Image 1 (cartoon, rainbow, N blue to C red):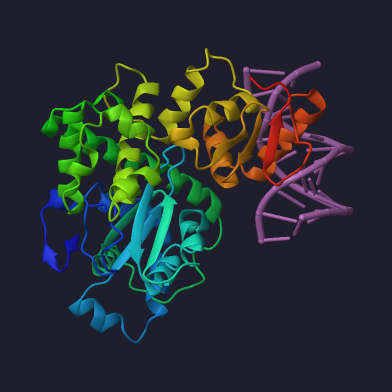
Image 2 (cartoon, rainbow, N blue to C red; image 1 turned 135 degrees about the vertical axis):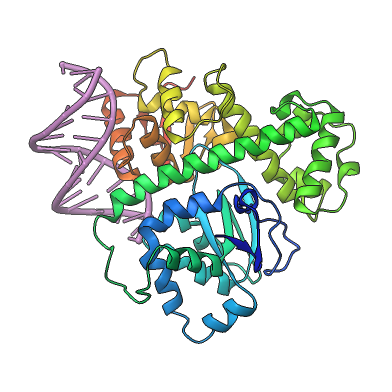
Length: 382
DNA sequence: TAGTAGGACGTAG
DNA sequence: CTACGTCCTACTA
């Protein structure tokens, strides 16, 4: 049973995933946005991760008991969602980050965000595409104990066959998160009487959405900063634009809008008669079918990503569009996307880049004249 | 440590 | 047979 800050909550309230945010909050800030089912996520993740979860406690023998009793600290679960790029600002202390690292040590991909955050001063800002789930560690313990896992200190079990488990786990978690995010958006649309796609919003809709977001994230009033702007105006604004218009929370607004934009795009790409959101598997299926039944080529796939800078600009972008020069900014993410598209869960950048290199002989892609890491060039730019 | 280059072989369509 | 996917070695930044 999940609790929040020691208080028993209803089953509906158990469905909590905190998209933690807001740069001006302290590391101890309370959950801001309830967006998904931590209970379900934990059910998926903890099946395979109990050992690591308990190791987390083992690392802190002194404070754990007392801390948990008086002020349950939170466990943060980072979930990388391929093809679903959005940003969250997470103000947690370095100490919390190091703790978080130990929650899922066998799932480094989930935690890659912390590499960047750790280079900054405390309170740290973890800025990364993805979602943070936050739950009470106390409740995580209760769940584990309830599952009959009393052997707290066991660091050797569960070390083999992790990769397959992680892949399956990742897919399940991604699917759950995507599903929950879409539900939240649908609910907001009903409440606000707006369309899910921000591009279609009038300035009035934008103001409604801002009010809603202020409410969710407990932000100061920001509507004035975006007066007379339509949804399409909003959608072409950069993160910096948001910051300039709204300095304390521009990042967050941009991130939240990014969620909506991406969700709308994915829904649009999905079967139009389907009202539900698409998970990783569905994304794969719709991606295949969107290409006239023809198997997509890697170079086509890369171009597809490049043509969607709103969604993929953080992992691949044009350096010089006219010359067809592009850079892969997040090689692991691009490889993951390619793996999803081709139903190759073991895809990585090593293999993807090998395929790119096959294009050298075929005259499809080459390295630019001045070779740079992760930079390639289409021989015949569109 | 991560990316680059390319050989060798396997495999699905 | 094509277009990768996988695994590998050697090299480089």
